Image (cartoon, rainbow, N blue to C red):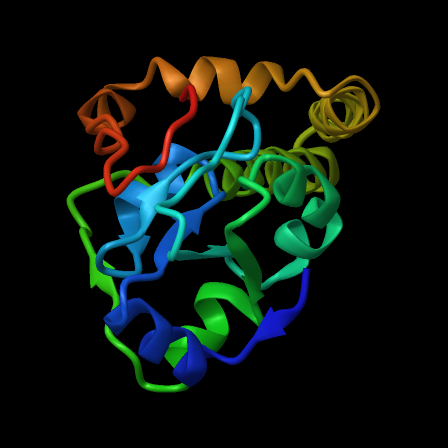
Amino acid sequence: MPAIAPEQARQMLQNGAVLIDIREADEHAREHIPGARSRPLSSSISSMTGPNDAAVIFHCRSGMRTASAADRLAAGVMPDCQAWVLEGGLDAWKKAGLPVTTDRSQPLEMQRQVQIGAGSMALAGVLLGLLVSPWFFAISGFGGAGLMTAGVSGFCGMARLLAHAPWNRALRPAAPASCGVSGKN
């Protein structure tokens, strides 16, 4: 799929194009482009169809996810529907000074929560290991082993635990599909 600049995408949206945010629901709930439809790449997307004369524009945070999943995304678009990838994603959209909806009452994205948690464990383990007892270095080792397991297997125990934290229960579900875009969330 060809890439499209943010300003060009904005003009297409004003002319009826459909914008699809492929980031996870927690990322979309915290910050998104107004009017974007949430269709996480991790969900099983059966089809992404728009009206015959509509264009579909996919985006993520930086453009990396959409670029790496372009074939999968293109396969979900109806043949008579044009599709593009927003070049630079949400970051480029913001850099161009275009509007973004931010809801700070939503929790931080899960990946950021895991990064904060794992980084805190590593730092605490090192500091306690140096200042109290070398046995505390095991905390850093445990955190590193968890991150390696998550990277290799795709299962992140810390994310599963954090998902049950009280602040993450406030996450509102993504808006239902509309404008002819279908698929499972």
